[in-house]
Amino acid sequence: MAPGRLVLACRRGIRRLLTPNDSVLAAIIAGTATLSASFLQLRSAAMRDARPAGSGAKRKSRLQRIVFFVIIGGAAVSGFAVSQWLTAGERAAQGTLEKELEARIAEVSHTAGELEATRAAERTEIENGVLRRIGSDGVAVAATVPACRNSGVAPAPALASAAASSAAATADDGSATHPCSETEAIPVTLCASIPANATITEVALFSRLADTDTPWSASRFLPGQESGEARFADRYSETAPEAGSRQVCQAFTHWSAEHARVVRVLVRYSL
Image (cartoon, rainbow, N blue to C red; front, side, top):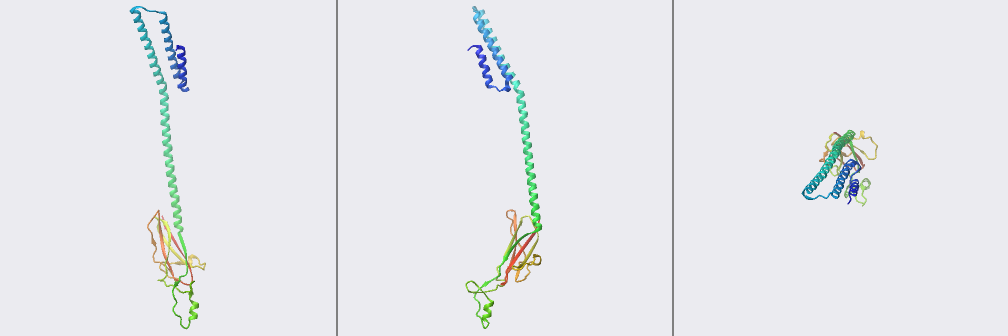
């Protein structure tokens, strides 16, 4: 290949391999290739014009070759050194940029963590505020207890059989029924859910006839108090905490055969 074509091929290869940011490095390598091609041209011209003979001519030819290779090696080393010097600044700038980027990422991650912790704390505070307000107002549970019936065969009537038959209630299947006693009535248990770490401050008990509109404030019961054939248990009970809550339960017994009752339990607590 002719030296001129060799230079053009080198320049084209450099343009394909290097980016626009490396134009200075490309110019240096192209200049080195041009210089080498010039030396090759000079060497070819010298070999065509001079025809040495004898040992002196051979020594001179050997010396020219050594100088030629030294020049080429020096040009290659110089080009590599210059390229390293030019790219050292870019590598340093890139390293600085990477460090700044890592610092920014760490700062953003730290800020995101603090923001998430703040949100969690605020959410917990809001939830606790709502639970405290509910505890101050009280958690209420209510139920309707029907009139108590004790099914059984009625005793044989005497002279007042007609009056007794009209006073006795009759079941759907035709068998007579009789009012319950307190020992025969089945208790009803009302349970209110409160937070597991709550402290109970009050358990208020209420009961009134189902067909009346008596205010709850006038229908309050005391634990163990009997009124209108109805009674609440002497004490309330608690279940073990589960899933962050526990239940406060109160039993109620109703043995009246004439009226149904509505019962209500109100549990107040503090956090």
